[in-house]
Length: 174
Image 1: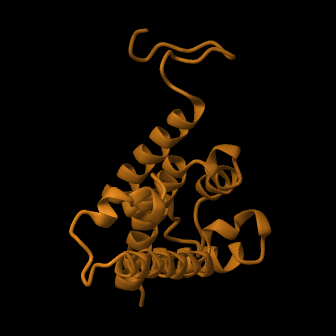
Image 2: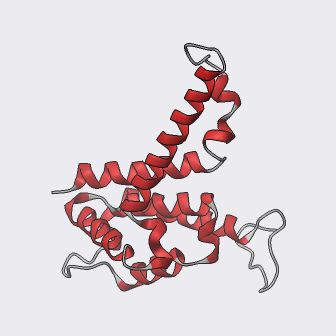
């Protein structure tokens, strides 16, 4: 298929699933907003342009959001939007609003910190198992060989994306 060719409705480009398209679109938006952070925000009004807000609201509840790569890309856009004090306040307000909506619970600080605590507990559990098996110190490769037991594939990138967002909000906040 040629670059720029239109794909008829109902047909997929071979090798790409719809979630790949959405993740790619979100990555492109994150790149644009990283370079031009003020592009998404109306400098005259205290809110985001309605097109950006509507799109982000739509994507936040999209079925593909259950996939870690799409969620990572979405968090990348949110990290880019958190540029400056105004963007940081907007993201804080957005996460506060998300806490009151069950379908958006996965985009809350409470969910981030609960996930971190769960992984810390799981790590302690694996460490305790290693110590009980006779070792005083964790061998270098023990947890590397059991990565899936600690954190499923994709979750590490998701956790990093959340922490990047948190770091940006803290750094840019006023």
